[in-house]
Figure: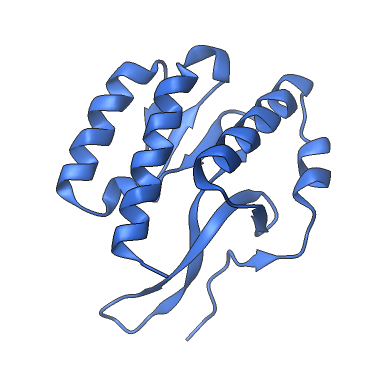
Length: 145
């Protein structure tokens, strides 16, 4: 079975953020890093070349495929920031709570497993902080250490 493409590595998070372009995305990335650190209490780790992750968990599918992934995190992409809020998918109640908070957060789009934000000025960071916390708690319930 193939190894997952995105794995934790020893690359420097600070160096990665320092090279994010344009400068506005870099400043947003610094703010997101501070917010994720505050909520999760975790030091960030690079996952693949572009994802900044906080914490990790081990998954195993019914198919037998298994691996490790970041519990939460983000990637400062050129077009939009990708926010990995995996707790949204842990259980129905958490999903509904997060969806309600997303309605209050501001301008964003959702994908299969991500929330996309163009710039932090478009959203309420207090609501994002609450969402990160709700998702973090859900992941910790579903995947205890």
